[in-house]
Image (cartoon, rainbow, N blue to C red; front, side, top):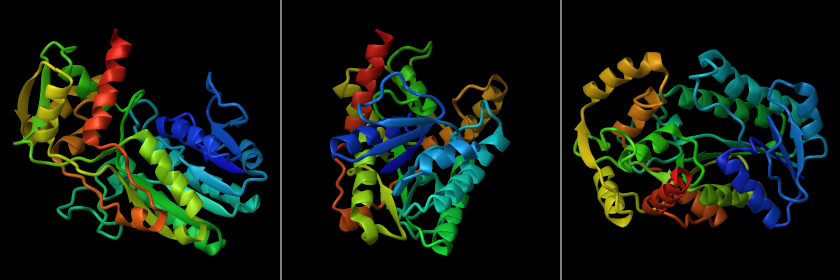
Length: 323
């Protein structure tokens, strides 16, 4: 039995479908029961602080894939976000130990690396997270490693690039597409500097395949950390030019400086809009390109979609929603 926490997320839904297709027995744990649930999947409602429900969810489970977290704090507050990401993960680990769960696979993030000049980024490179989410996830990683080693639980950590695709709820992706597709008043695509930065994406399907491959690797993946991201990452300018031509988008490109972005972030902060936040400024002005060789060598995983394919599919989905 595999327990997936955060099964209602974009990557969670895709992972559930992947595991069911592969014949695995799956139990889901999240805040609410979705309208559509694959046949044969057991669902338990709860959060990371409801110990009774978590113990119930962990009973009879061999492997936990922990996806449930909080990426932004606009609505819940920074304190609650931190509590969910760190304390919530520890609560789940205690429940896993009590239920004698054998394996714990933790979803981290590319954001643990922060701003770096080392590319592509390897798993053992220096980590200086810049965003609240990245800071929380790095602390949770350390917590998982220490707890699992102490209690002899096999563990693996997966650090995906920015996950994007149809049905995404990432505000930076959605608002950028909104502007690029002539939905906004200005019809502008913002571009950092000269557009020479690289920012790697990964599709939900490739992310799900990465988790599945890590799960199937068994003891070979024990104690290892894996980067996961698309291949052939273009510069931001190359990406915009290709998308504009491929999807016939009509927008102007506005080059923006870090100081102007900072001004906008201060200006927009009282309105609580999800644009020019610290996370989005990080996305605009920093390169992020992960070295995924460890995942490929240990598990045989290979991403099937690159940045252009991921964004093209997202644009098609977004157009369908607007129409």
